[in-house]
Image (tube, rainbow, N blue to C red):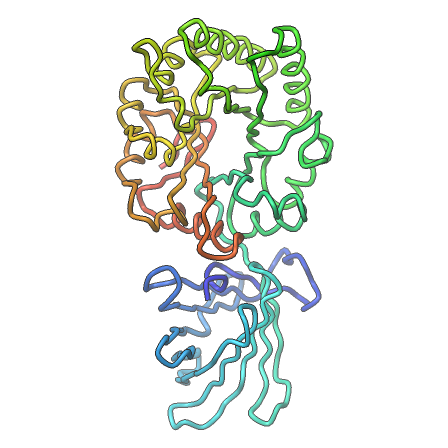
Length: 405
């Protein structure tokens, strides 16, 4: 029942693929027990431009009988019970009765995808009573981003459809993972920007990759000049990079070369109105001649030109505490990848509450969910990450200008 969780609005027609400007019905579904059970459903009807509750229901899944069970009440005071079952992951049937056990109607649920559902009500005799289509539109008030590596295969298969679902599930902006030869997911910069924005998202950030070792300074900076030009056309706010060659660094001279390149690239980006950041994995915490690589880069890159994107998961794997870095180098960590060992917040291995207490000190502007290990279909796991960040009271709204309480 995971895909049922969220905020839904009715379309004017069941064939519509976009919400009307003024939907007539709203439905909220909240999990009260764990991540996917004890669903509290409330349905609202718009009356004189205000939402008025017309139905409240509690839906549960009973593992013992493999049934869906429900109870509820409508605006007329009529109470009802429901029992149902799954045909498959995307289809289920509820059979409603009154308190005397007399059949009222059957309701068929057909999930077109995780953000579109068709409900079809029929009488016990099979007569069609009503049909309504809902499209999910979760709130965006916390300005939460998503790193698209979380949905990499889906993006390569269907960029528009994937971005549409990400926008509906409540994400505000994206950070890309696929940039090559001046294109993003095989789209020209302006085309990709338009595609992203057409789905209610903003194209804020991009992660790119370019090796230093074995390449001339001219070829490296030529590549970066073209890269920055493409990103400027796409209107991004920042570019980050992660270097797979970090584990090849053997001397301080090698390390200085990396820091010098990062300063050059950061200056180039700044001159084009783009912030530039360094993303960590585990190798950044290796030690070279008594210097931790990450610390050296923090101390030998210009804060005017270079920020750091903290991957909280890889810091945990490296056995370092991000809070120590936020305290030692305040204001340098403008973006975070908030990631867990499985769906976000489910492993109980990372104390996200304590980490987020230092978000302002760190300088956080871009709060980015990332998922790379899945217990559910990818698109469901990604929405669970959104819900974890949105529903957690220790996560606030962060923006490019300031943190807003």
